[in-house]
Length: 304
Image 1 (tube, rainbow, N blue to C red):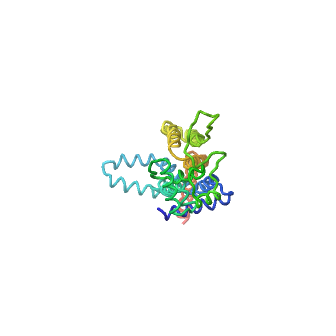
Image 2 (image 1 turned 90 degrees about the horizontal axis):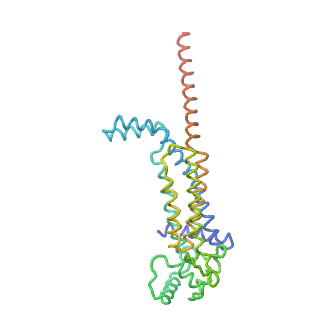
Image 3 (image 1 turned 180 degrees about the vertical axis):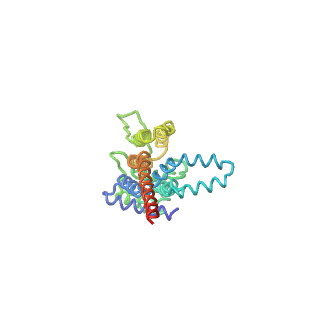
C-alpha cells in the first residue's frame, strides 16, 4: 500500500506547509480538492441513475417478456442501455475511485510520523517502545498518534519527532488532533475539548442526511424512503468518532460535510425532474425532425 500512501502523505505534507504547518487545514483542503475532482464522475453517476429511472417502464416490460429466459433478458437489457446511452456500471466507477483514496487518507492520518512527517523507522520504533514502557501494554495497529501525544506532553523524549512536530501543527481551535476523544465532566480541573470532534462528525453527517432527504423527496416524491438508514448513519459516526483518534474523526467530519454538500448541489442541478424533462424535450425535437424529413421525402416522390 506504500505506493499509494506515500504520495498521499507527501501531498498532505506540502499542503500543511502552505498553511503554516496546519495539519487540520491540510486535511480539509485535500478532502475538498479530491471531491471537486470527483464532480464529473458524480454527475455521470447521477445521470446514469436518472436514466435508469427514466427507462424503468421499459425494463419492467423486458422482465415481463423475458423473465424466464435470464440470458435473453440480460442481452435485451444491455441492448436497451446501449440504445438509451446509459452506462450499466456508471454508478460504480466513482466509488471504485473514491474508496481507495478515502482508505488511503485514513491510513495516512493515523500514521502521520511515517507518511506525513517523514520520521525514520528507528525513531518510530524507539517511540513505540518508550510508550509501551510507560503504559505497560503492547501498542498494536495505528499507534503513531499515541507516540505524538506522549512526545507532545513530554512523557517521552525523541529529538527527531520533536523537531518534526515543530513543523506540523496538530492543533484545531485548541483541540489536539493527536489525542483520543474524551468526555470529562470536571470542567474546572480537567476541561477537555476533544469530545467536540465526534460531535462535529455527527453534526456533519446529520446535516448531510437531512439536506439529502429533503432534496430527494422534492426531486422524486414516489421514491422509497431511506430516512431510517440515513438518520442512523450520523449516530454510527458519533460512536465511531469516540473510538478513533481526533485526527481520524476530523477527517471523517470533513469528508462527510464536503462530499454531502457537493452531492446536494449535483442533485439540485441534475435532479430527475429536470433531466427527464430535458431528455423528453430532446426526444420530441428528434421526432419532429424525423417527421419533417419523412414528409419532405414523400412530397418529393409525389412531385415526381
